[in-house]
Length: 178
Image (cartoon, rainbow, N blue to C red):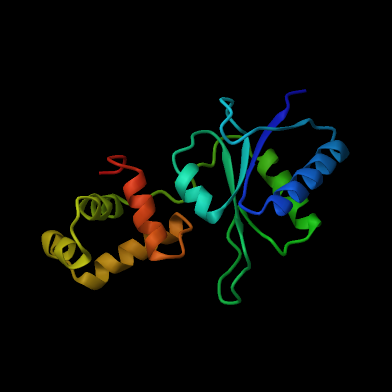
């Protein structure tokens, strides 16, 4: 039986320790072996449970791992995104999330479910070069509102809620989508 390599990368050590215990219990109930890896280990993880901020900084460029984002709480307005674990979720939901993740083989990293459109990649390229939204709009021959819509769409696909997270993500992946 192949062990499931899991990394828990969260600022809240108590929450991470609780996750580790619950996942160990899940593995025991489902006759699986859970192997918890350190963040800086050389082995490739199968599942990464990470906070939103650390996802952007550390796990944006991962290949072949399932990324589950840990968020504080769900907004009433937004629908539940896939592969998101809220800190207030119960154990049953975590078990369901793990079962779904392990039942669907193959990497779900970065843009697998919602690929960026060619136009979104183009917008990223201009923003990365230092153009602001109005300059990008002029170059592409569209309105500023259209560029803003592309930016919001990219942020949604990357699960980024704040503009400064987008900027950090944009600068941390130098040359990748230009």
